[in-house]
Picture 1: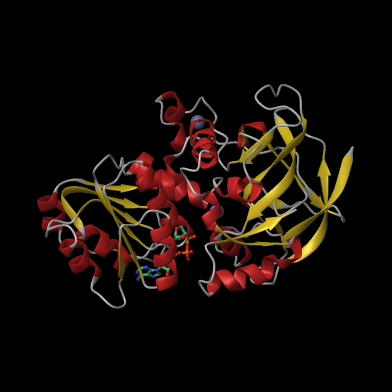
Picture 2 (picture 1 turned 90 degrees about the vertical axis):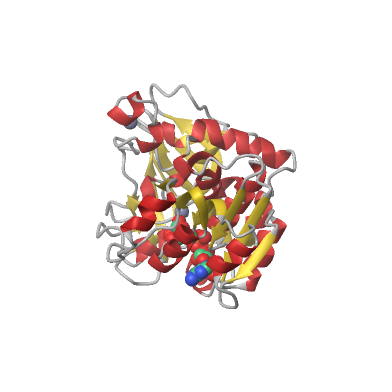
Length: 361
Ligand code: APR
Ligand code: ZN
Ligand code: ZN
């Protein structure tokens, strides 16, 4: 059996997205059909639309989502119909070298749903990041669903499925921010603001937020930044040093994804400090650093992919902290929009007006 729902599709490179009828098959073995309640608009969706990720058009966009499991296929035991779940784009295999070594966040055999959703004329769709959640219902691998407390707002919960998890995880999983640490976060959009919130959760004593946009610095303050630096007005490396007695920060998180901000992060850290690259660079970006500075400063240069998260561990924990009032996920939801407003939300994202626009169904 199949069902027909509405979904947001990028049909060809660079063209505006359109609202289409999507045909969704029943879940096959190991799969789950999820009724989407909310899905955030992320840069990655725009990258798909622009053809920057793959040429496999048409794409069914959307991947920062929460919803309710409607049906499951054979052999699914971890989730059941009625479960409120957050979707993740890494259903870990449990068998590959990374998984067997206890580092499932590097799993290189993640699997998505095998059944394909199509357009009404039968054209197969490529779901963005194996999810495709700008649709009333979507088909995923059961391992992409993590059950969390139903009391959470779907708009806030869905954001944990990507950008917000990347930021929080960059601080707590990759950066190992600890009690009393000084942290600097360069770039405080949705991802960087989440790194600020994660650093606060981890007990950082000082959190220095750096951005070129005062609106972002204001939100960062609400989420736990103790100091802010507008790097259009002050040179950020000097400013971070000044705020840390001349030393630099224990952990610096780069959440822009550009060589110049990475360089700032590199020099804004204390001796033996850690730099975490969370921002996603483009293939042509290059970085040049004096090797002696890499050697002389010690410490660690790390990158964080999806916040090095383990959804089964991190999603329920962060939702609990949210429900206890200790993690303000609602602060990331700048606006809620309808399914036919995704294209407009891309423009707002481009203008830097929002942390996240979230489609609510
Ligand atoms: N210095 C400091 N901040 C900067 C600079 C700069 N030179 N240039 C841009 N910014 C700020 C922007 O003002 C904005 O607040 O970086 C922030 C980027 O945030 P968003 O555009 O909202 O992007 P976000 O969703 O946070 O993602 C950040 O992580 O996942 C990746 O692909 C994503 O590379 C992107 C990064
Ligand atoms: Zn694996
Ligand atoms: Zn995303």
